[in-house]
Length: 478
Image (cartoon, rainbow, N blue to C red; front, side, top):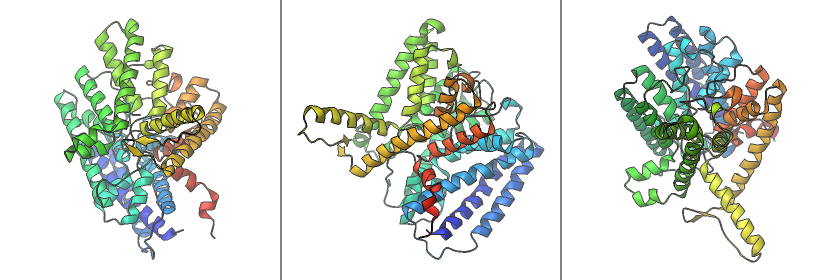
């Protein structure tokens, strides 16, 4: 185990964290808010500790996959623990558990909240909540890789932090890959913010909701979510939620004018197909209660995009919908967005693999001598990817089951507990009943909140980095 490079990497993260914290501090000064000073204090402490951790250079800079996963897991835990301090020191969130929950929800782009009066918060704190979405969407370490010199081993960090069953470099160098990803991410975010401002949305709101959409987070600056904004802004957010749920490799191919390769993507076709089917069923189901086709379409398309991309914004209380549309939303929670996007969930690519595995198994039972390989985009899926996907599924449901049993200790109803776990481990935000779009997680015990925090970070990091971190043999000296 290369402990020195792990410590060195944590120091680098804390130094960058100091820079991130200065942005909401400037926002607070712009609005004349005294509590912005707490961002400066935490930034100073973060910079000092980070500098001390980096004073001793690692003797060996070699990094294996294990170190990469440990660095990523530790970094995300530190992000949540340190990022919570401004909320706590300012007194806007009085419990450290609640502050960590809100911060972890932000960085993991979950959007679940313990706040009961979000509009009472200061501008700098609201901005920090939404900015954590943007930072966590593409990945904090991916950002660091984009601006700092890297080596071949840095790909272990990108693979551990990026969502999806497999991550490939867009270009030969890791740093250029990270740079291209963040350039596309930044450009799409800026375009959405500009369009929202042109649609009469206040500038502050446009930035916060733009960050939330880009990171597929879900923190809003209003208790009503997105419901109070005009239809134009709702449609814009719907479109961009859907776009940020697409694998960013597709956008790279489009920029490179490789349109045929982009159109061949089987995952994107499934993504469009699942979304279209879900919207159609929901529109038919809620039309009789809404009374207007266009309003039904607006609500269905928005909520389906919000849940499938794991953004978590809401324009209506879907707790009031019937069982069928609610069931569709719960299914979308598990499907999630595309691999290589900012969305959460199990990912469409894994759904494709599982579907084809079942299909091949049925074919094998009928024709025992047949030999069929699973292919995606015309390429054979290698055994390593299949093994990892299957292991992911097993670990996913094991963690889900244990989390659900622990949450049940609080004694809330089955639907609230079940969808609460689904909403956090899939990084969605809202569930049903108590944890619905206009509810929250404030009523749960501290134990349940820490379970949710673990689920949020574990879900964001695709499970294995956190499992390796908490495996005793990982730290045992040989």
